[in-house]
Length: 388
Length: 223
Ligand SMILES: Nc1ncnc2c1ncn2[C@@H]1O[C@H](COP(=O)(O)OP(=O)(O)OP(=O)(O)O)[C@@H](O)[C@H]1O
Ligand SMILES: [Mg+2]
Image 1 (tube, chains in turn brown, green):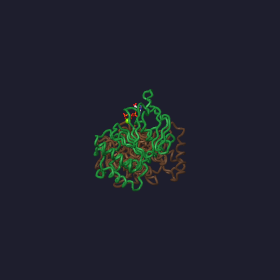
Image 2 (cartoon, protein in one colour):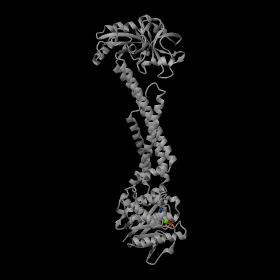
Image 3 (cartoon, each protein chain N blue to C red):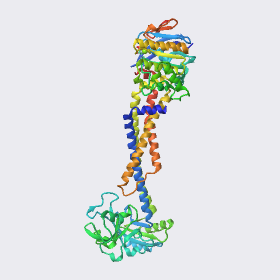
Image 4 (cartoon, each protein chain N blue to C red):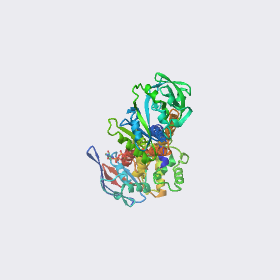
């Protein structure tokens, strides 16, 4: 019977192929999307593992870029017991580098970080950027107000700049004094400069506001982090400018929420793809069943039961689904491999995903086959014979 | 008794109007009998064959074939009964286009699985009906007469209790038709299956055959 089912599919190559392509496209799309999203997730987790302290931003501002806080908050935070250091940071988006726009894509965006090297030396582990120096030197107190920057290896390669070269950010040229590499997609899009320099870059004349603070607790335990976090938030609870203090864990859960939305999106897109694939199979099988009415008459007259006919049609549609699933997986994985060359991060195609796609293909086949199979099974043999 | 029908009625409804295809047919056919069903077009011959062949259920009355009351069986039991006990040869379109001659002979058993030796037996039967050289040919590659032979071989694979043939020569020229009848006749003698044939061609009737004439849904002659 399975051989017979296969034969029935193979004798209608064009139509079978169309149904198969429908399923394959759906599954390839799902494989591609899920690969990209899981690659993105592991990239974010990588990033967050590199940042160990707490980040203090203006309440409800989501990201340091949208936050503004008075510089004077630093001293108040440092007085809180359990806080080792509180370092101001000024984050700005660099609209263009070397005359090229940087906001073209999520991953090519370049941001400017202004920091205070004197205060940074108080951090026990050092800042993520100072820990990741490759060549040249860190930003130092003597760079205050000087147009000097530390750039990432990625930026260095992209703009063919190295230590000693000058790089144009916005309207002005800056001297590259060092190159770092954290290995994180998000962190490596940062130009580091002295806070004083960054203020002028941002066009801030008032030198008493920053975007955020990096807060290092004395002890690194999660309980201590949570306690310090609460204490910091409580410190400014009465102010008009309240703060949010986020730990790595919280960033992760914030990102988790974001990725949750991404997952919902993926589920919606996948569901649509799956429905489209199922409809393709449904359509193909319905047409096939309609054409083969006399054939079912013959089969039934010769002793095939309703169940037998149902199983035949389901076997055919399942074959279509599985073939489409395999093709879709192949195309999807291949597509992801190719796309990976043009992406700044590695998409991940986990094996279970391939297995799932395969299973979904088979499921699509079965789902798409149920209605046509019922139609074929309920034909009365006499009507089928008289249909000649 | 291979077949016993009592007051068999079959009414179709087309567009709300009832069409009485059979209006009370009572009939008994002996084991190993060879029966011709004749009558004008639309008289109900095919309807009777379908009821005898467990392909359809009567509106009223009872029908017993090979000792089984068909009205008491479930759909699945009817399917099994057809598979195990009955052979069919219709006027045309007896075969599955995708399958070759051997596979067409075997197809009744595809769903439940072939018993060992069936394939060899199918080939032997195709040889018996004169198609030894055509085993792997598809229906398209066979003439009308050859297709009917495949259908006959298929019916014989199971040693049927009853072979039902509805105008098996209707689409064939008279020489080929005669060959098919000769084949059915010799198999009837050898195998001892009961045969019921609907035909307009009365020249094949031999002494000792039953002849049943139907007109307007009723038996008018029963000899
Ligand atoms: N499925 C059906 N629906 C409605 N009416 C039907 C159906 N099948 C048969 N009939 C009617 O029942 C009557 C008997 O039909 P049947 O096919 O049994 O005749 P027949 O003797 O085999 O004719 P022929 O020699 O032309 O094959 C006809 O009037 C036919 O129109
Ligand atoms: Mg007829």
